[in-house]
Image (cartoon, rainbow, N blue to C red; front, top):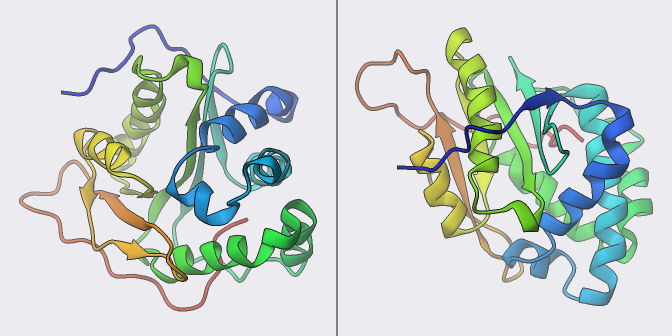
Length: 220
């Protein structure tokens, strides 16, 4: 049973919330196997992550659906994907390189791997969910995701995400996701678990969906 905070108020985020939410993303993702693979140098990581998640959040605000809590302690970036997205914008590589500098090849590789294994079936994609480290383990993240899940259940729409560690993988399973075949990032990278939350009215076990065509880019 997953603890879900009943005191969390969820709002749609806007550009006026960005300055508060960018640090939440950067701090929540600062530690972990993916962070160690992307930017091994801790001294570089904080500045790179601050610029990278500014790019990520602004893209989500412009092209996706961003939920946050009333106190701006958590944020979830969703992208509706009724069909495979078009190829990434021509400005994306330059923007990514400006944000991540010498680490841009690893970030670009992460994008490409994620998109190569992305389901082709219509769904909502949870690109990022982050909780201020001081507010973690209080059910805030589960409440934030459950808010969107209820909307998806009304629509009969599945959800998809990638889990970067076993602890998060188990949380998502408790929230109704099924783990699919894992991905192992190249060049001694960590394992990523693909997670699928099927439509609630589906009878019996839900098969993990097939991946989409190569080599579409993640929507950033």
